[in-house]
Image (cartoon, rainbow, N blue to C red; front, top):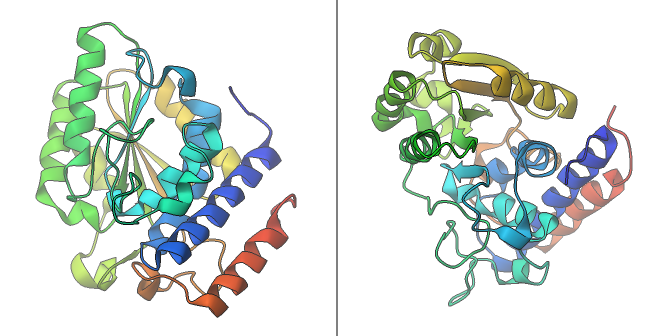
Length: 280
């Protein structure tokens, strides 16, 4: 399945956002802000870019995605439900005791999850291993890794970046969810990401700058990464934390809390009003 229609992909991203709000509200816990910010990225990956098939979820030839910022699992579960790996009813079990859809992705119990994540900073290392294995076995798989901007304060990320460059992993594409906020506030106040583009270039990456909510730009960015040979790529996607829900947007407090009933109703009205409409 490859969807190229921009408006259809926008609608899928909006459906993902609706499911994120449902999941977090029903669970009374979760991380809506950073889940909402990656909805467009996931819609493009799962419906336009990745070579995947829910009927062959364990195929060695499939492309892989590592959600390194595993606390945004509500977004990953939502896109998996849209793509047919899960049912919409499964989403109602999000973060419920004993259910499979826990707060962080679990590759052992959930179809379509390529890596169990949650301990920040480790995802790019795992993605490197997948990309190296694909090259060693001539599988032709691409590997995608979504990082949080607060997460790249972790030193292991940069050690992994050196490895990506050393092995010239041109089948690896990292995506930085650059929304500028983390649990403690503004990223620039916690540990500023000065000269971000230059940093990744210095570590040997092909750096692509992108509006992380512009579907057409995202498609073009992923295509550029696919065509880049001899070095890994990173898409620095400028995003808005809480995107799509006006009262959550650019608010650090929505990193990790659930809406109450009034907030839930307002969020759902905002998102449902966007369904089927072109984004201006």
